[in-house]
View 1 (cartoon, rainbow, N blue to C red):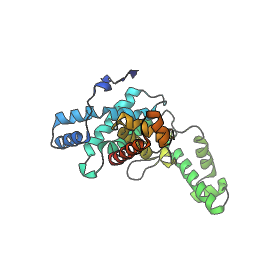
View 2 (spheres, helix red, strand yellow):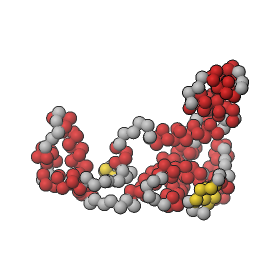
View 3 (cartoon, rainbow, N blue to C red):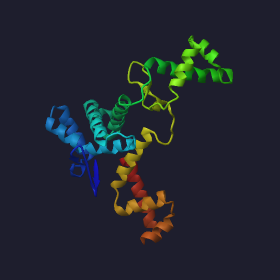
Length: 259
């Protein structure tokens, strides 16, 4: 991938040249696609490649090829399109982002260089889960002997399993399967700040900000990102406080409706 001024090329696609479609246009294309219009399908996919690009930027720094992640993300995009139904009552991007992320997670898991045998890994996870459960019940950390008795396993097997996962384990390693998609270690880690939902909301807010006028954008940035008062904003952009208040209310009202 190469970055230049207002231009991103990835997998031979110059995303700066891709068309942008509004919600009404995308809804119309989806209806055409569901009627079997292949031309509309191709047009829709090309129009949403920027969405894939925005998602893969979350996975920077993992040593993976951006082109590879982009291609995997496109698979997620296509799967989202195949399964999307306008009756869901959500924007396509809101539905597609988790599916694109899921596809990339599976790719990273399957291409992870760290390998621990399934049986050993399963034993280790069961031991960790049981250890936590016993700790709550006993109000102290259980011994290996107590873990072995609870799991009906040999102490040596539990020790071996726990030692095997002391090395770094990928966050995309599956913890267990439950007749469906696997649950990954990452899914078990609580992070109230950097969740997929929070990221999607931030993406929606960013898109909503772009719909505002330059003046409205500046007012909101000064008010809510820099913490300035309406009077300070009025002085900076040379309008009255009443005008700042009116523009701020209108901008927030529009963003709430858009998001």
